[in-house]
Image 1 (cartoon, rainbow, N blue to C red):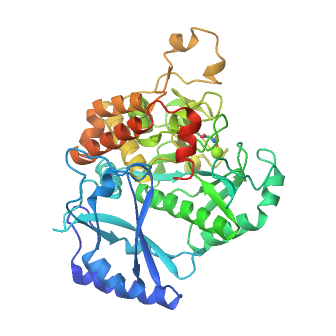
Image 2: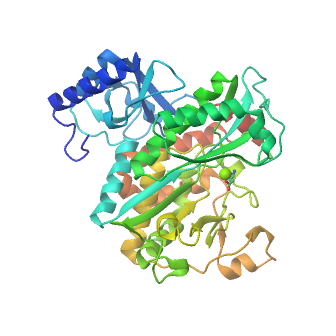
Image 3: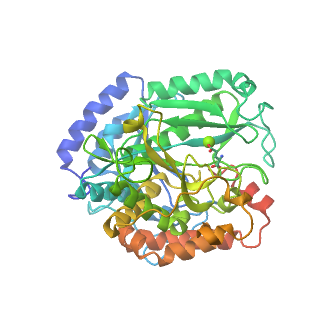
Length: 464
Ligand code: GLU
Ligand code: MG
């Protein structure tokens, strides 16, 4: 739907939905799942029979705005503008994205935009925010190509809830892990292929039972949609193989967590601005200014990208989680890793990776907020500080200060303080969305105040 003009004309939407529903029905679909991601990072859903899709597209599906104030444990808080039992919103499926779900036979999925009953965009709609920021970039003549990496830990379903019962004891990045989950991972590739997701890679990760899947870059909203689709597909395929999965930032205290890294590159027409410029490693001045803006805003962005009660437990130096506010070419300890690509492929492959983000983040908020911060850097003509090589955690005392490299906030309370003060993100998100995010972060912080890490991990492990 066109965010600027409200819902498109009802008749046209109904007609499009009639055609989509007929196609889905012919493919054996009985129901369509309409999802949005809340401010706690949890994908919420309403389902409609496929015969009702036409009505849903024309009039939307009712959903309470109270979901905007939900916390990770399903309790709710209140914000200045949102919360409480009153009011209703309308979920409008994005029919362009509607697709049958390979691992949930008979079901299709479509991401939803949220509107008021009066047909105005809901100011708390996270997907609408991502779209607005993509449009703002277009006013600069820029298009973004984005992709989320999805990491998860697999465990045997029915195992003890207190700890993941890993279905493989194979070593990190080890072939044994691919063999142990061979059928499951094959079915995952098939399912994603059937659903039109262009997978680039799947591999075992560092932590026990951990895997990662990466996909092709798309526009910012599509990349966030794909992140949602990939995660629910991983979950559904795994369930068919007797496995449960966790995308939580911290799944077991003391080990490497699940990242949710964002890759992105600004393009002007057919030109990737991360390549062929006069700046460091071929960055154009525009890409450099954009990335400098992102780097500068990272302490506040962390409240969006690593927002969960367990997120700080993942942000440990020397764990490739990017906990230092610095950048470096292919530096996995820098929050901003510049990826230049192989010789000959740079013009399409060059991009930047924001490594400090995790699986508790709402991907729509992440793409929107990162673009907002980068555009502010562009407007201010920022330049990047000196590049950082190696792991700052191993540096001799005093070197961090000498080079002006800071560690990112180590608690959500700290990143929330930066986020509250961020005039840039408040303006970009709008008062309603910014305020409710502050309320959710604050309430989750209070929920787990004084809880030891093991308790935070146990309470959130199976929530994402
Ligand atoms: N699992 C790591 C994290 O917490 C990332 C590993 C990688 O570089 O892919 O972000
Ligand atoms: Mg990884």
